[in-house]
Amino acid sequence: MTSRTRLLLAIGLTAFSLPALAGDFRLGDIAIDHAWSRPTPPGTPVGVGYMTIHNHGDQPVTLVAGETPVAEQVSIHETRMHEGLMKMQPMPEGLTVPAGETVVLKPHSYHLMLERLERPLAEGEEVPLTLQFEGLDAMDITLDVRRMDAMPAEMDHSGH
Image (cartoon, rainbow, N blue to C red; front, side):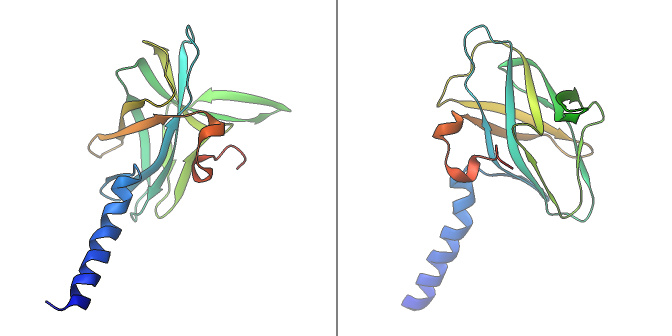
């Protein structure tokens, strides 16, 4: 093996390992990155889950449920303007990610509600979360608990 071949092989292996190091998750055609949550003060009954969901397939997929050991229930919500007021509402039918598209769960938009928290979420911890997409196997990810002002710029979707 020539030194050039070894170099190209090393670059290729590094490129394939970078997404795993960045906290990305993949299940078939679904990829999730920038999964995060906010710390919660003691006594706060709810937390949130944000992430970017990429559908690399040729069929739409629908996120229908989630579960975590830190909350009794995980539900999918949308926040939007309604008659001049921000209104949050559950999405009991789930959140569809069209084929070949990306949906961002972020503040003031789509998000997961971690309801009836067992304990406060602490900055720096990783919260295990299992997502269920209709017709697919369960997908295990983790939410990085970070303050918005402590997040790298690529994770801060608050202004989008």
